[in-house]
Length: 250
Image (tube, rainbow, N blue to C red):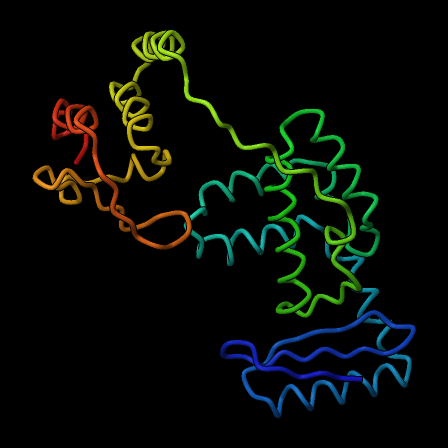
């Protein structure tokens, strides 16, 4: 049975038949979606759909990830971080697995292996990218994956949020270490983060035009959740900004 629904500017159609994995595709015209659904249903009835699934032997996880990195990742604000995650995936053995033989157990083994190396939150982010890649492939790229293998496994538990600030001694040790680094901005960035609770990406993107010294505020036009915000600046935060050479922070 075929279901057709409008999603943003496209029509998404999915054909489900007992004993066969669901097949999905998107169209700009509803008539094209309905025609495609009828053709798929005829193929199932005639036993011709098997050929489409055999094609999965020729498509690897790496093929999907590479296409995702080239077409989907650049549209995101987190493109740089996501590119790093995908490149790490491409160097892993899982990337060489064909979609025909990909299973939830293979993804689970990857999860368990990574949990021995990094924190659960990192693994959750990595699997989130992989899950979205498979979902885009199923819904928009006409890849006949029966299911999303990442959706079938348990995600690692999210890490507990941190609820303490560094002690004066810890901060002093950290700033001394920053003095041995190559960037003169490292120590000011850390001190400014402590004063404002801003994210690293927000801090390094600050421009002088966004600082209102008279009102003691800083406007952040682009944030992680997509909503701009204005934050108050403490006297110490203003002192940190005032001490920066303009050439370094413009």
